[in-house]
Length: 287
Image (tube, rainbow, N blue to C red):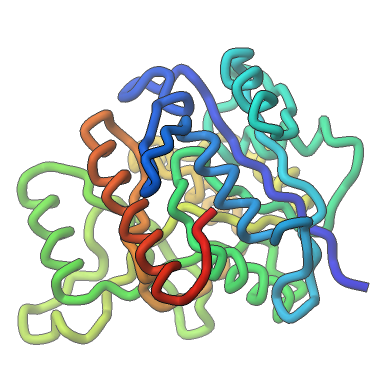
């Protein structure tokens, strides 16, 4: 019998950089405008299949997709397009804490909880598949998250952002077993100019799979200094001595951009068009 997984999409209204972000309208390739949270929900639906289904070679069944929020405006919008909603406390510090709170309200304990962030509508189903495959291959792995190798152009962009004081992405450093050593908003590791083409830098993508026990352990551990300094919730797992496995994936066929600031809207809409074009090329349909 396959393991059961639940996708939880955490969404909060009170973002300091972009208040009301989950309700921000985004225009798709066909001209239809939908709120950000609906695009993210559709990405989750695409991963589960039209009526839910098994992934990771049939070893995991995605049985439920839930939007976890603390705001009735988001909840009302989500219910309007057919999503299941779980209300969570305003005190949740990050998406991982919100997933833990939502799990308490689900009335069941799945084998795996998938955190598909509410501001990541371009997450490919392949990333979810690869993350779950790693969890299935290592039944003792508490947490898994994906990363992709940086091309020279991607690395150049990250280094330029860093030089100009912008946060252009999060990088991940891991050992030969693909267990995370550290995550940072700085570009890690340092790469000499003559080795830039070697794919030594990996860009972390904000998707997580957890065992329920790992979420409970996370909530029992206080926020750590590095988590607060970097603004990266996953560092609390490492501080608590909890393994975080990396699913190293090929670079997606479209730009996997998160909506962090209002200025990102045009880039997200361009990537939605890029994704739609890729699906048409493959003879499929985007979500």
